[in-house]
Image 1 (tube, rainbow, N blue to C red):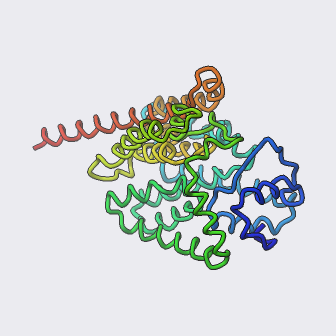
Image 2: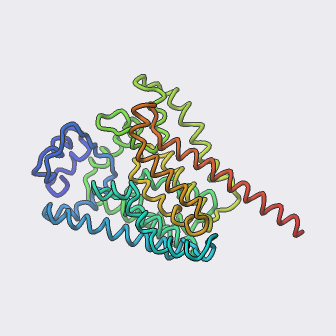
Image 3: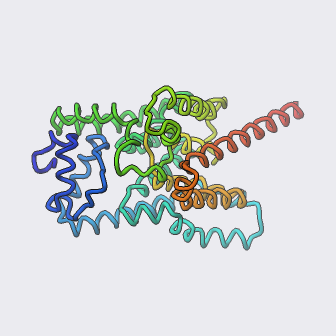
Length: 363
């Protein structure tokens, strides 16, 4: 639509629907039972035009290659800069098995499989988060912010970490992220008509109502918004929704800000940042959980049982989510994320108390 001079119509639902069901635009015959509204920001669609220049068949091949390359590179960065096998608590044979064969678990992780089946961008987000955290561990906050700023084209995953960095005064990170955001969004603003931005602002205002749209998969959802939708059903009573979302949102934020410092050496901190991001976002689907492979692999290298437990419970939640929704009427994944967040918060508090007692003994 952008290349064809129809950018002004990008966020008009009827025009978008007509185009997505036109094989001349999409390259495929899309089922009319499905509905995928234009919810991404203008820079996202601006970058997508780079692929739109290529004939559809070759664009598909190029896109698949980019996903595989991002997945491989993100996993390599995680293995090279985040996992710590020198701290592995186990025998040498188990360590060698984990080091050599953990890639099988990465490939078979349900979120990985789904990303490659339908071409979702999870591997890109995995790579961005892996590089960001590796740079933070190497005390290169400015470069970490520059890399993380690329994720601003996916605001539902971008919004929380800058707030955490603001809480802990990591100003170099914030400056780097602001620089990248200014370049991405400023370039899009200069190239796209003003009507595009007003249309996006309207979609942003309606983002919390996305759960009520036909074609929405409640069993795929990872956010507290999904829990609220179950609580209020078709009544759409805002007060009931906030009774569900507000207390759990405040809890998620409290877990992230109660510490006196941001310990980037602790995989639990990264886990809390990511799980809170999924929960507090107005909309996230389970294929974005692919990012959680970073702390899972990290845990496998220092605490094998915990790493295997997290991998198993995430896999089970994704696989059983449709069954849970059908028979219990609840979206399973948000419950699992809240539970692990609470477990991580308890674990970090115990570690802090232990460190405090050790300090008192030394004194």
